[in-house]
Amino acid sequence: MALTSNRKVFSQMNASERDVVLQELSKTLRYRALASRAVAYERWKDMDQLGERIERDHAAIAGDLEGAAATVLEAVRLLSDVDRDLSATRH
Image (cartoon, rainbow, N blue to C red; front, side, top):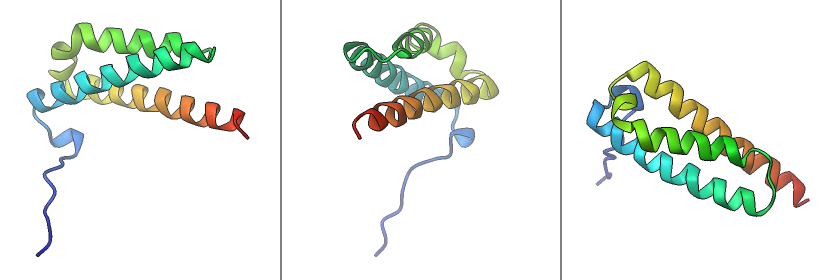
């Protein structure tokens, strides 16, 4: 028997579900900003500012699908950049 996933595509989520995703993303950004600051990664402020904006305005952001999607893409880009840049310095 195959397990079914209850995961949804972001664009198919309602505002309440997008809000939960945004709040978790804010926590991740703030944590990664803190860790990045500790290793003097220059983009830590970008992550911290976006995380703070999401934390402050998550409900309003979640209410606008296009704005929420753009915010998520920006966050994913920042998190991806930090992973790529910091892993490159370890080699």
